[in-house]
Amino acid sequence: MTLNTTNYRYQRNYQGPVRAVIFDWAGTLVDYGSFAPTQVLIDAFAGFEVTVTMAEARIPMGLAKWDHIQALGKQSGVGQRWQQRYGRAMSDADVDALYATFLPLQIERVAAYSDLIPGTLSVLAQLKARDIAIGSCSGYPRVVMDKLLAHAASQGLTVAHAVATDDLKAGGRPGPWMALANLIELGIGEVRACVKVDDTLPGIEEGLAAGMWTVGLSLSGNENGLTLAEMDKLSADQTAARRDAAANRLARAGAHYVIDSLADLPAIIDLIEARMAQGDRP
Image 1 (cartoon, rainbow, N blue to C red):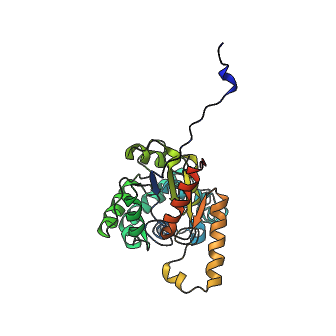
Image 2 (cartoon, rainbow, N blue to C red):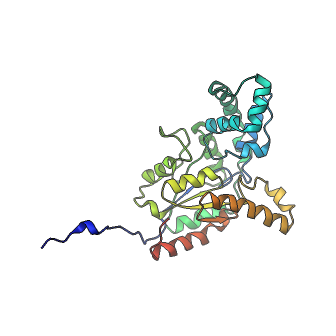
């Protein structure tokens, strides 16, 4: 007698430890508040006599920078100002021109904004001690990423792999490709054993699309958008309000967990490993 297997579905269920963490850069590992991308974009638009506010610049954060500029041009406020200045909607040729202005400014200034976020070196050391591989990716293009990697290394921060947004033919966020390219390079065979950490909504979408656990950062990055010095001036109630607002946006984007900054990550890794041991998956 032959068993009828059409009535069964067989499914593997990973129950081991976290194998890799894939980090974003600005607002996650470096650049508390994520100002290097936003301020330079504002300055690039100013060179074309179009005002972009910091709040507007932050909305598409996490996208590749050409895509970020295009998305800004499609926003109602920025789009209207561009129309008023030039008498037409922003075209792809205009995006090319803005990007050509943005890129040298970003290369020149990225290091000035990219001090390590407090707790970064300690957390990465703890992960490495647990034999967790460290990957990374960014909305920065390769020429900016190389400058950032050198500056980070001068502060003691190195990662096993870093993918820039123009490294891959498929592109960048919110697609899964940069996160998955890290796993190929790191030799990690189980996507469900990996964690994506990011301060932007497209970065959370990236991790979810890749099939990973996702951790959002509410205070250190783009969704909060304040410097450490500005944070120190807030009352406890003001800090809580900003934390809650940012955490809600990241949670709505699908983040499995939301923490203040990277310093809180080891405890989340423990929780994820406990859930996987019980059979949970991202």
